[in-house]
Amino acid sequence: MAALESVGRPDGMILFVGPGYGEDLPLLLDRVIDVAGCEQVVGANGYGVLGGGFEVEGQPGVVALAWSGLDSQPFLMTDVCGDAFAACQELAARFDGPLREEDLVVLLPDPRHFEALAFLEASAKVLGPATVVGAGAGDPLAGAPLLWSGRTVSSGGIAGVVLRGTKPPRIGVTQACRPVTDLLTVTRSRGHWLLELDGRRALDVYREVARGPLAEDLNRAASFLLVALPVDPAADDLKPGSYLVRNVMGFDPEANAFAIPEELPRGSRIALALREPGSAREDLKAMLEGIGSAPPAMGLYFNCCARGAAFFGIPGLEAAYLESYFGKAPIGGMFGSCEIGPIGGRSELLTYTGVLALIDA
Image 1: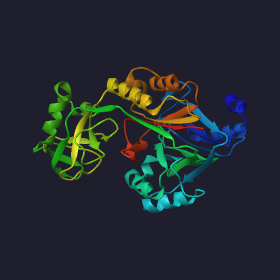
Image 2 (image 1 turned 90 degrees about the vertical axis):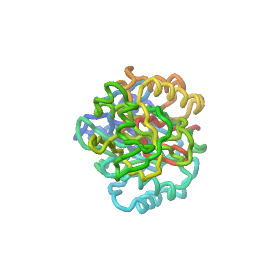
Image 3 (image 1 turned 180 degrees about the vertical axis):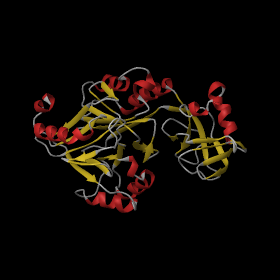
Image 4 (image 1 turned 120 degrees about the vertical axis):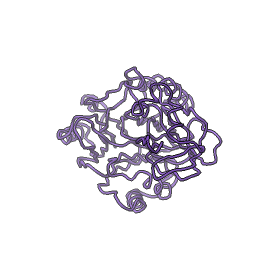
């Protein structure tokens, strides 16, 4: 808490908390709010936290980002089930005036009660030109995802904050997967099951790309060989930042099929994508080079729980990259159960990604 005592009284804070706090979380919040002298605190628990050049995964850890002189509006919605459009309208009604392209909307949902695709589709219509980023809460140690605003803690719903800057935020999205096939056309499907790709049995195509031991161990293959969905249905190929990644949910050897979380009708196109650290590291470097090296006033980084030390083989790699590019600029974030960020001009539900949002003075 000494760090909070040294910054004076902020106007607002985002508090990211690693796993394992559970019932002790209200006590932690009370202490942070009392020390900082600021009730405008929002946040969520995650699989880990990062900031200041370090990452803490799978164990308790806390990162706090505090600001002064930046207009912000925290919120906590405890019930967002049902009509996603109505929920977005309720959210927009909480803000002072219409949102602008200079505004950053940070969403921290409980993924169990968040109809992500419907909510994000509605948000594009209701929240106007503001940029929407965020991550799903999760706690693999203490159980339920927890969200908070002020001293109120909730399991379920969405917490978050609108940060109303003077310039549009700088946004970068980095992906851990690279396409390893050309675009393939879904020629037969049933619900979530892909039955044929380019007229061939879908599982045969998957095994052919997996090759070797992975082709024989499909459960293991599913950890590495995923599905890329183009954001633009008319795209001829998949360039970095132009596709969404979805995991393979299951296999049906008798039907020669595999399933993904989204239902794809006949005529849809996909590619198979390989999740591997070398490409992910190069994509991270390219994202950082593209976003500009000027240190921001503040930054947020939402990272996938499937990245980190277990994936890269190096503890703290992404936090170290952020510090090497932006120095001691205050950048913090969390490892979430999913990510939210813009792909192809609109905010999408993302997986296996890192989403960086920089706010300039």
